[in-house]
Image (cartoon, rainbow, N blue to C red; front, top):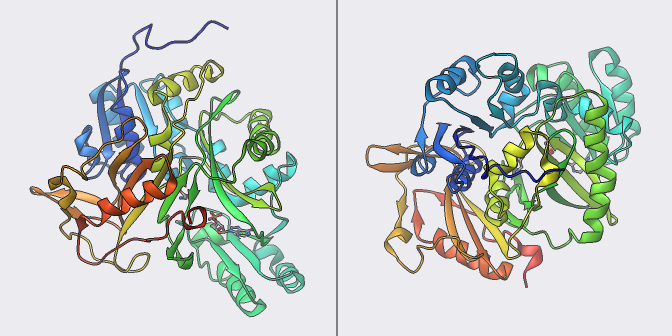
Length: 448
Ligand code: AMP
Ligand code: GLY
């Protein structure tokens, strides 16, 4: 196999990133360091991405509008951040359009995105390819009564999942039968989650510790990015409501070589084989939401994109040129790429708007006092330092204001996890907006 080196053949591309969160700010930061990127655009972007490229206000689910940007700007690569455009078929839209078909796009196809877009599809797929996951049964209006009976006989807690995308709210862990039967009825008979929830997966509760594993695949080969652990609950000690993610760490101490070998053999490789065997076009990220149960990895869920806030720790540890990886992915040459990872510990702590994940205010001015303090104003360099990724922010006149629930993700890296956490918190203490809140215990299980 000839060595593949896009630097040698001087591929220089204009790159478009789709999305507006902390994940997309982290992508912008990373891509802006690539010699293969001549110009960067972010649609719609946020107050932070504007530092690395040009933000373009557009609805990323309006594929014709995305096409117009690609054609008018001469885009050569599109990096899709969130799942929605993928589940809606943006990859297929590009491949079926003669003006867009040669643009490199981080997929997967609509068929592949069902791994995230349909939990029923994902469960059937895992069953077929013998990928370890919770035992389950699928129900809809036609076998509703059978479902009631199944829940009655199920052990507690029992997990109900809406089939389609439900903005992270479609999973309900029920501690008693009254709640489980009521939720089941609401989902199927009252369309609690709209069409997305009229098909319901009822599955066993898995008791263990979760981690996120990320593969980039070209449909045949894959490379493994650094793993991460996400903290989803709003409250310290993992209490309270679920959120999009309040922080993350990488590496994950229990993801030993031995454990990761099992993940590769039992989960990643059968997944990529299965996709190929089904004839599904998949060039993009696979996010494996895993749980370790009695030392064994099992799949909780698949996503067809990178995680947020996991990306804010994964990319600061990744030493490779990301654009080069995407070019190799496009050419099905990921087998020529070797991933190199910073060994130091990374953390990201998310500052959210007071009230999140419920109702919160937007448009509050953010004071970045740390920018005035040269000591705290660090950058990631040789595995040490910090960087503030914007999630829900926007420019308003000469100010940056809050524009979402998750506002900023403060990522830091140091030799020890404890030091990385301290550094992130030092920066957070020098950021202010009304009712700002962050969890002070991210990484708590792994530090003394
Ligand atoms: P999902 O939307 O599939 O990511 O699920 C959200 C969260 O619910 C997961 O991150 C887990 O913490 C939890 N969860 C989902 N399925 C199960 C399960 N079968 N057993 C235990 N926890 C689960
Ligand atoms: N942090 C979890 C996710 O991105 O789905």
